[in-house]
Amino acid sequence: MSTRQGTDPRGEAADPTPAPGAARSGAAIEVRDLRQRYGDFEAVRGVSFDVAPGELFALLGTNGAGKTTTIETLEGFRRPSGGAVRIFGTDPYGRPAGLRDRMNAVLQQSGLLDDLTVAETIDLARALAAAPRGHREVLDRVELADKSDVAVRALSGGQKRRLDLGLAILTRPEVLFLDEPTSGMDPEMRRATWQVIADLIDEGVAVLLTTHYLEEAERLADRLAIMHRGEIRVAGALSEVLGGWGDRIGFRLPPSVRSADLPSLSGAVAAVGVRGGEPWASYAVTGSDTDHRAHTAVAELLRWAHLHQVALGGLEVRTASLEDVFLRVADGAADLVGD
Image 1 (cartoon, rainbow, N blue to C red):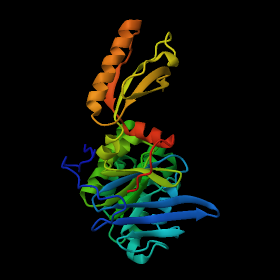
Image 2 (image 1 turned 90 degrees about the horizontal axis):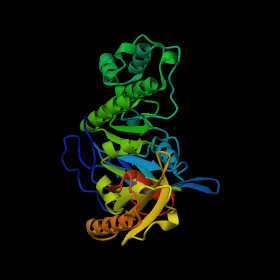
Image 3 (image 1 turned 90 degrees about the vertical axis):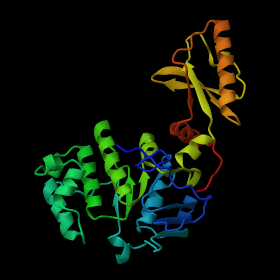
Image 4 (image 1 turned 120 degrees about the vertical axis):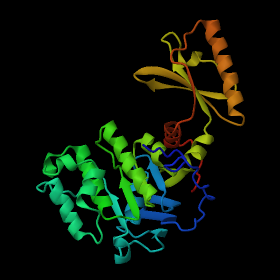
């Protein structure tokens, strides 16, 4: 299957990301200084980004960060308190007829009718669409052909999500909003669904994805942004997002070693957490010439371990992951970076 770590599904380099806040030519989705207020509470505070046709943009964030409010505004269910949103240059508020057939969504809350079968659900949606995909094509794409005569109420949670996706792609949308599209799926079906999404991007669909599965964003996104408290804190292509967060050195913390006993390593900041139910020591190596700094820090750590006869179980040296960045943003450690 395709992976999209800064490349398109064919492995080619993605287009360079424009300067933060800059409009991109031919953008399908444009968000400029979006603000949404609920009384005195500002849920979205000056958010800007855009999504081009044939691109997947992942909008990530902590709970209550403002992701859902942003998507609801783009879908036309809310009028902005400030700023502007556009779909193909048109204000989506009220879902004007000119946009209705060009956009669709997989929402967290499904609107499926339990008494219908899968086939009946597809046929009903096709009867309401202007130029729908074929019945069999939809079922095959989301791998539900063998459930055609099964009532919706008898489907598993993951199967219902696949049916939601089938209904969304049935209308041949040019813009697709995916809000936690693979929740409830097993790992095998999640990866099969990633391929469906990658195929849509190949067809030129502009996709805005929100997900709590960070691996999903790493695999699919051309660009991404992480929101926290209504603002975008980090944004860009995956390589850009990870590039400024350095390397990580980690190992299991032996019972005989306290946090205060850990050595100070050149150019590295220590932290202690839990991984797999075990205490885990980690060092973040940042700054210029990260490779040299990490090499020096590892050498110092090995000398300390030899001197104190400490076993460094599970010792690893790796680049920062999206999870590392996400957790740092959640802790408030990232400076505001607009997209």
